Length: 99
Ligand SMILES: [Zn+2]
Image (cartoon, rainbow, N blue to C red; front, side, top):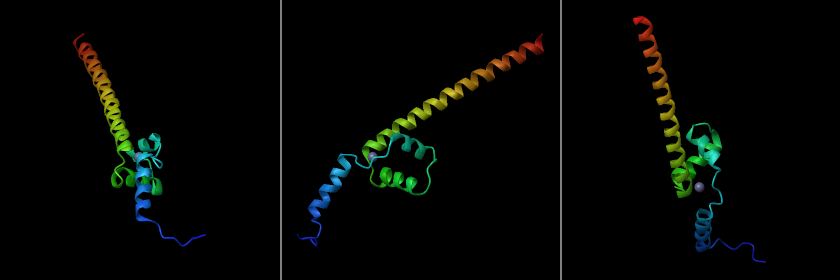
């Protein structure tokens, strides 16, 4: 047995590419969502930040993009709904003062 063998840099490189290609440590989309919402703390938050910004994982960044656009779509729907309701109540109030 040759236990003291140093790590071959070529092997380390392979491990890194496998790690990236196979998305072994990719966090679950729910975690990405929490990270986006600022709901993570400590190690989890650091891990996600590292994974997305330092490792620049293309898969997770794509998921993040989708989550962001979905978020924006949801927000604009809420705003439109609010505007509709405001408009309707304004119209109703105007009608009341005229009557
Ligand atoms: Zn990832």
